[in-house]
Length: 530
Image (cartoon, rainbow, N blue to C red; front, side):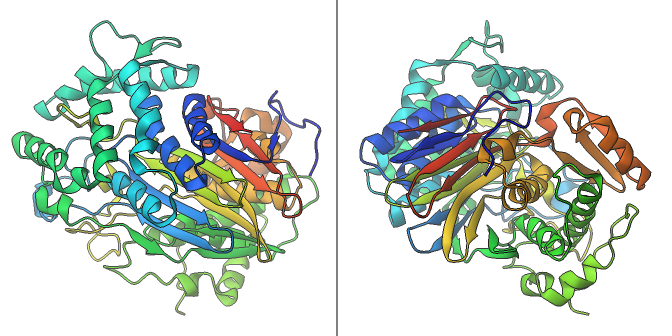
């Protein structure tokens, strides 16, 4: 693991031994650290941090989000799928012949985050659940100053919301763009309604959100403003404990949540790369080309097969089999492909990582999708609802086809790295369809190129966006961009760092127990540790 700075970030990795939280907003990281120092474990810290993020980074997530988590309990890795299902009344006919919109009630699925917090706590938590809401409640009620990247994203959300009309959007403006508020660094924002809701969730173990007063308010707002979500949808929601899936690269394994999440795309790509000989230099165009081509093939398969496994069988084992990966690997040549799915049988998200001194580690991600989500906020609650239903397919017969009480293809994915039977640690890269691409790049930065967590995040990124188009950060360099172009890639230099995701990493030394963390230099993040 190299120690000198090799990229433009001035941040250094953080080392500690007792506990660590890494996330995209410093105030939330400090909330998690406070819980660790108060006797909580990594799961307690993760829940407290996640709750705080709904307040201090509402541009990316909220109480009405979905959640996925990977938990290393000291000897085994566990997966939690806390994503919600579509309303029982969501059918193709309910769309009236239109495509699924990005905003409004139609793309809203049942929010899984509150129950996800409660389920994580019930299995692994140490401190009282209500206590874990206290940091979030404090910032919601007392207010806090906006950080720089948060303010930029908030202003973008306000500008986008001006184009929306309808009663379902009215309360969003009252909560997130009140009179006299300007989204700028240092501006104060608070939401007493948000605080009250978090207290209700804490006192009831999240039951109030699905079967109590909060559920009735959500259902009433849907009924009054054209939504399909009702009390039966909310009351019937459950999380699901799942067996994580993995792919190898050398002695290491990358672990992901199985479908309906898109982590399978990262595993397919890594499995393909595992059979290739990558150049010794991370930014060698030949190596970048091979990674891009593998990622394109991984996405092609994910978009073809990933769906809710309770509605359609997803051939995970076949897609990750050595024979299938070998066949896909053989498609990679010297020129860029326009990828197609194979046949194995023949932007808005927050991420956090937490670790404690006893060896428990958590990789957790929650998201409203597309910034603030659907634009629907439930009056009197501060609950901003996600728009995950936008990722349903409108293609008849597709495994991910729109249907009632079904989980859509999900972009948010927590990652975890192991070596042999030992944990290396949790990591993630937020950002829609950038996420599997970020997982692949961070894994290779770490395992193949020996970069420390901060360097692995700081390294210039690329992103395949469709066809032969690849966006690259300008720090990658003109020589590399021209070399990729010569291989047939349509290379576009992207100057907006938000396009390339926002990551966090915590690795643990198996011999000493020392933790080392990195936090995304493209955002306001922080590693909080002691």
